[in-house]
Amino acid sequence: MQFTAKLIQLLPIQTGNGKNGQWKKQDIIVETEGTYPKKVCVSIWGDKINESVLQPGRNLQIDFDVESREFNGRWYTDIKAWRIEPAGEGQPQRPAAAAGGDAPDFPPGDMGEDLPF
Image (cartoon, rainbow, N blue to C red):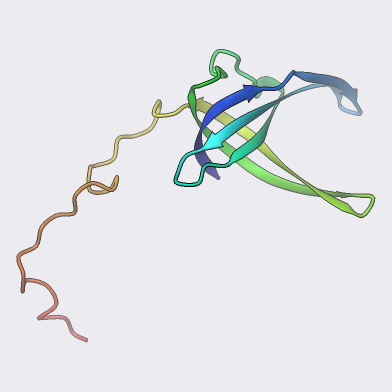
């Protein structure tokens, strides 16, 4: 899955040791775009943490997975980013009509008269 959001806050990097060795995690708070923006906490693990991209105020394109797990009868959900890039970089450009621009004009009466149904 993917969404674009503005980076609001960087939380401190967390580190530790687990059964697979050392780990580090960075949580970030982003705000989604739209009429009703939402704040979302996204976790970034290990070598996916790129401090040059993570600058407050910057719009980011975030590719992520959602994962839930149960612990002592309660469920916890994480949003784990597997790629974060500045918004608009590395994206193929779409034609204006496909990107929500003006639809092509069709003269009245040219569509629908010869449909087989």
